[in-house]
Length: 149
Image (tube, rainbow, N blue to C red; front, side, top):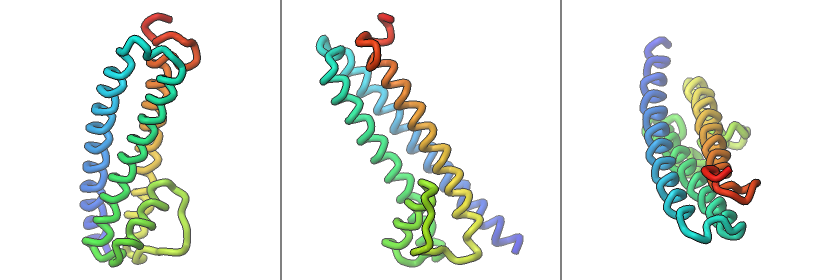
């Protein structure tokens, strides 16, 4: 039993490390993109701000899909959920904390799944904080970029 918990914690360290690195790299790239796009003379225009925000939301979604796929790969590699399709579904439901009873992991891997949910809450929260910062940076509610307020 103890060795199984240690195995899960080891795989959790892999998942956490991968998701944090994906998040840092992704947010860094998105931030650079926002800085470039918002430096345009027409960046204050509301239509342009909305387009930038839409792109940011899309890219954050892609980041989270990559993180979900990381955990799905762990489920498949460890045989906790042998089917890639089921592992992706289960991972998405767990990462987003939606849950569901359609697909289940092996009982021995339930702790791992619960901790994946905690990781998902943190990653999504981090993305929301980033999204709020971008909204402020673009001056979405004031009509002025943050530096001019």
